[in-house]
Amino acid sequence: MANPDAAPPLRADARRNRDAILTAAREVFASDGLSAPLDRIAKLADVGRATLYRRFPTREDLVRAIFQDNIEELQAIANELGDAPEAFWLILEAAVQQQRDNLGLVELFTRPPAPSASPSVGLADVRLPWSELIAGPLERAQRAGVVRPDLDPSDTGALLLMMGAMSSAVRYRDDADDRITRTLTLLRDALDPTGGPRELVPAGLA
Amino acid sequence: MANPDAAPPLRADARRNRDAILTAAREVFASDGLSAPLDRIAKLADVGRATLYRRFPTREDLVRAIFQDNIEELQAIANELGDAPEAFWLILEAAVQQQRDNLGLVELFTRPPAPSASPSVGLADVRLPWSELIAGPLERAQRAGVVRPDLDPSDTGALLLMMGAMSSAVRYRDDADDRITRTLTLLRDALDPTGGPRELVPAGLA
Image 1 (cartoon, chains in turn green, brown):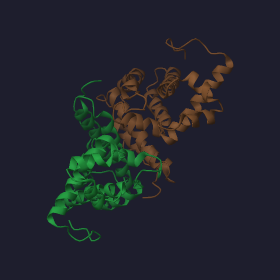
Image 2: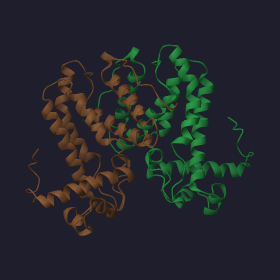
Image 3: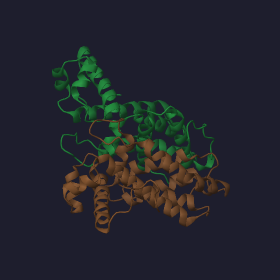
Image 4: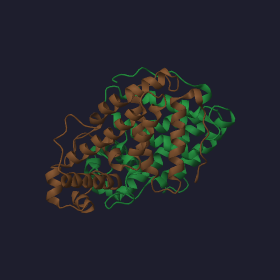
């Protein structure tokens, strides 16, 4: 979807570069954290350092662009699902997938404020867009009786962060998928106790 | 409690130094993360660098000692509570308090494996002692019907880590306490759906 604050459209080759850089940045930040060398991102994107710095003058610009893309992706899902009561849960699951294995996001939300040499993007930057995005679907799910009435958008943000941290912690385990699915089921029981307890997928290693 | 693998008892002044160092290390790792300068720990503990390095030759030794203390503290609580069905929940809450605001713990569990210049303590080191500690109380709570029967010790470890990440993320917010209490209530509903949904404390900021 169009973002009214966005810069004018890029030419096709510039757009390709931008997309390649963002894809690479997602991958590198996710696996190595936010202090990963930017050169690694340029190399993975197959662009020169100069191109990377022209498009994204600071590390912070890269992080913000990734967030913006994430929010737009979720907004597109929300638009497609419309007023369906299950939209709330589907958007939350899509957001969990975005956070999945993403060490960079976990760092961003949990580290001390504004350390030197780190981008000053933080929880506050995503809390508002996320809350605005999820407020409508949450309210409709609550009106339909499938989510507890006392939950607020901030609670869902906290649960998202927790899933991000949890999936980062288990990402090298053989049973990571089952672990994540089990935890998501537990959270669903927490948010919608009327349907629970739901069956958990079997655990792998104890 | 005595640890059979521990070194022989220290003289009183050495014990005082050790305790002061560990108290300082907890505070510094918790607020600044695991890469905080060890000199800051020595200064806060009011001991010389030589004393710190004699007692804890590596950063890893400090981290392991903190974990060991945490586990012993939880074991003492477990021993005191004995076979009471509510022991499971009280131990879990005590463990959440230990993790509370603890950036170091979150880093330890979520960062990539064995980066240079970081202690190689990791999730595997705490998973086993925690699982051994919580297995009995969990089983008794399940037999008493106050915790869902399909939960395993690993699930509780995941929830602990998630609470640690969540409390780190909100620690500079005015409503941090309420946020943490709300999330703990949600988790309790997830683990013991027979009693839920429980009432959430009011949220502060949205």
